[in-house]
Length: 77
Image (cartoon, rainbow, N blue to C red):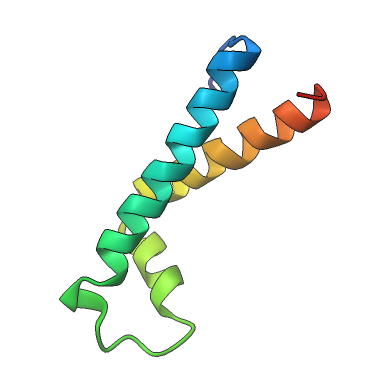
């Protein structure tokens, strides 16, 4: 599998707003999947990993949010 690297330049206000948006998107899509009948009988502790396996875009949202949060902390923002 090949990797894709993105580089974006944001000012502080843009970065903080983008991070808030990423977090809200992650929470929203995870909640939608969490309560989906498809995962109703998934054993405790396996629901989250199964959702992430079935929906790789959610993993991308989470990774983007974590990296952005990390960069904001490194910059002292």
